[in-house]
Amino acid sequence: MTMPMDQNHQQHQEAWSRGTQVVANYNFEGSSPDDLPFKKGDVLTIVQPTKDPNWYKGKNESGKEGMVPATYVQKRKEVHLQAMPWYHGKISREEAEALLNDFREEGDFLVRDSVHFQGDYTLSIYFEGMVDHYRIIAKHNKLEVDGGDCLFDNLIQLVEHYQNDADGLCTKLIRALPKKGDSFGAVRIQDFEAGGWVIQKKDLQEIELIGRGEFGDVYKGLYKNQFVAVKQLKDQDRAAQAFLKEASVMTSLRHPNLVQLIGVVLGDTIRLVTEFMGKGNLVEYLRSRGRSVIQKKDQIDFATDTCAAMEYLESKKLVHRDLAARNILINENNTAKVSDFGLAKYGDYSTEGGKFPIKWTAPEALKNNNFSNKSDMWSYGILLWELYSFGRVPYPRIPLADVVMHVEKGYRMEAPEGCPKQIYSLMLRAWNLNPAERPTFKEALQELQNLRSTTV
Ligand code: ADP
Ligand code: MG
Image 1 (tube, rainbow, N blue to C red):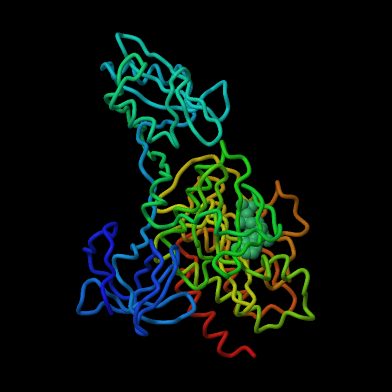
Image 2: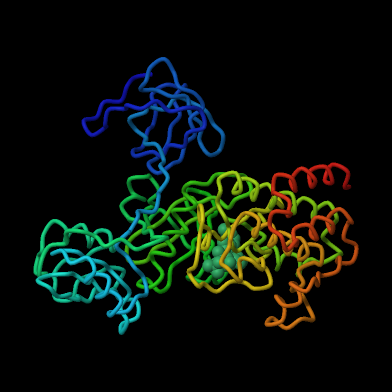
């Protein structure tokens, strides 16, 4: 075991504990049989530190263990949203002026959505007793102030730039006028690089189209000898932030029943690379196999897998908000995993006036935007109904517009044919109008595990 010498390698400082994920910055061939060879971009898991702070015992993705030189790898970091307190979303020019005229200090500013150019923004600045408005144009995944000559990846970069230098504006940006209440967040692309999540396009081979998502097409691909799913963003300008937010949520999650993020490809087309789930989504799986193939045991397994992932999200106070059988994926080993964190949020969330899947969403979430782990539990109840009815659409005979009304009057779906009574009891408790009376995922998981142990 000899310490690799290279001027470029940074000094290793913090200690890594067991289970830490690291990503290789360089190839390492190893010089002794104890060493674990790896390639740039490989993800390794720390097994244990050694007496020498520059060496760790590590494990690669196929489970092989060996010595890893710390200076060849970096810890994988979570990517978090950066706050944008000055971003006010959809407010009018008049509202912006009223807000800034209340403030009245040179260089006070805010950013809002453009009223006339969908997808663009407006920078409003108070200067010499007036409010000036600058159009921010979004194109090819970049932003620029109309007439300026700098391109930015996102609003945060843009604002930072004009805080340092007026660069053609009436004044440099001095004081942000904060949005009241919930503020928006944004993802900085460079945080994915710093966190070790970036995959080079040349290392990724696309094989075939396997699905179509809201943001773009999903391909089966090959990355480092493993099959992966590649979600490719189609409308770069509009959806990049939403897409990157989904990826940033995924950087903080690791659970055997959550579809794992492998990395992101940056550049002209943003791609999100996740583990490949060979049997596709649960609804299609249920519908195509049906009662003849899918056994009681499979159903309770899928229900438990999903519940285990949800219990993990509940423990992290993360709310999924789009839990449904179509967002559960099945792999070749028949393990079910929760995917699709496009709407997921931490903490308290409020109005964004989004479109929600009505038949899956709890009444208080639909009406008051009151999403919580308890509203996820309501959706989980619907998911159980889908699972035991082999992929039927919920509330089969009720028009979409009437569902909420019926539910509030007390209507509940009947048990699907052959559904175990314990499962139907769980559904009914998940559909309690009072969120506090619904079970937690932790409680539900306990019940399901008990039921699973007696299901053959
Ligand atoms: P969106 O939620 O943006 O509409 P999804 O992530 O649900 O998109 O993907 C759309 C479809 O692509 C899924 O229903 C599934 O059939 C397929 N798909 C998505 N991710 C994977 C994956 N990791 N492995 C296999 N198939 C996938
Ligand atoms: Mg989906």
